[in-house]
Image 1 (cartoon, rainbow, N blue to C red):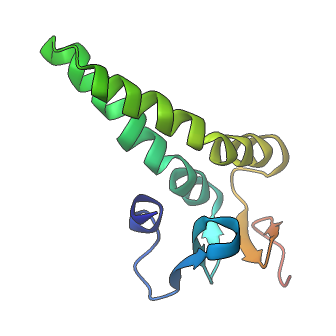
Image 2: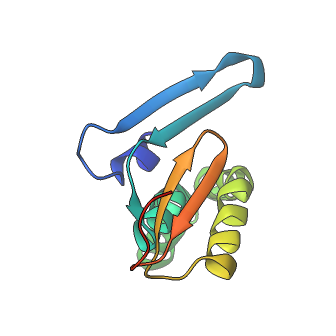
Length: 115
């Protein structure tokens, strides 16, 4: 969660929340985001928790089962983020801006105005 929110622009528009009945932690950004920033926010935890430890093990020559387990487990938990990245990559132009309203994600092109 904190890794998602660390990638948000630091404008005071971020929320970190908990939905207890669904056992879900979430972050929400109330303003517009560029498409690339949105994808970076989604991929940040995967890169830091799953890929970085594996890269460090490869470079240092260490083989720690715990790091492998953490990396693979986080990769499984990141399935929703990876699915969202795929949807955005297939449906949204790279120059678009995005905005969440509830569970809906809206985008607009560079020369369009309004939601």
